[in-house]
Image (tube, rainbow, N blue to C red):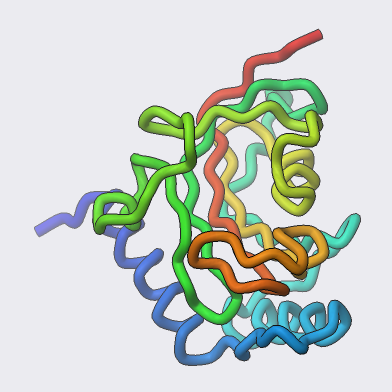
Length: 180
């Protein structure tokens, strides 16, 4: 019996979140940015078994990459449609697009997003870590974007996200609308 790609994706996401709960360090209010960076790097190498790839404070772990000559990169000013799930490094799943497994399990979607979230990249409307991470992606690509609290919600407690929380976004870029 063949398993669908979607059910495989669901199992993969569930596995990542369970691993995070079991292995990821707790990021408490008294953590410094440097401690969070160390925790993120440890999570990437030990849990995800990936290379540490950091640029502008955002750690990037590609899940699927478009290496074709027709690649459509995300650039500042582009309107981008996303499927995503967001959680703290300590394992709290706090947001998801409507197409995600987490949303179907009762999580609230990104405000204003339909089935998928549509965001303007580089406009300053997104948290800095997500904004910077999306600039490394292209249409059809999926990646984990990890970053410390200074590029997330900072010292603010927002919804399910405690203050000074390192964040992980599992992002799939489903549409790029170029705005020249």
